[in-house]
Length: 146
Image 1 (cartoon, rainbow, N blue to C red):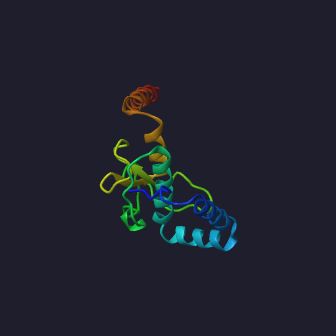
Image 2: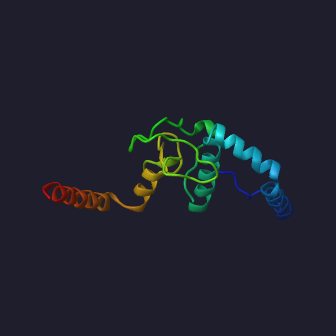
Image 3: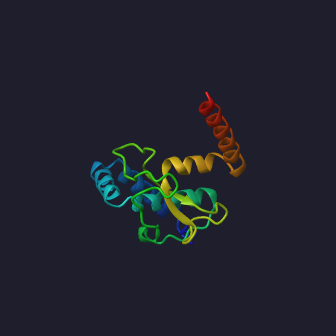
């Protein structure tokens, strides 16, 4: 599962935190990370998933970025092309989605969808989305009759 700081000394933890801070402020490190992200965004996706798993106390079984599913050319939900934005995430950016939110970040429970689809999925439950669909369908019928 997730490595933790249980068997580390306070000094060791402080050194590691300082090393991480120094890395974040290093321009070479940041540029290298951006280059790697452009080549394969799964690297950054895995790191972000790991941090969220620790924060939310979820299962995490992605040992390397290769455990994250391959990024499809198009979003399976909206059929829009997926690509990495330059500096800013867009609706077309690939996003790591947990199929069943109770299971955590484990193989078989993950898919890559567009950021737009993932935000809509996370902001509403099935009933909310169904209500929105029915309302939009009703509005569309009214507009067609006009």
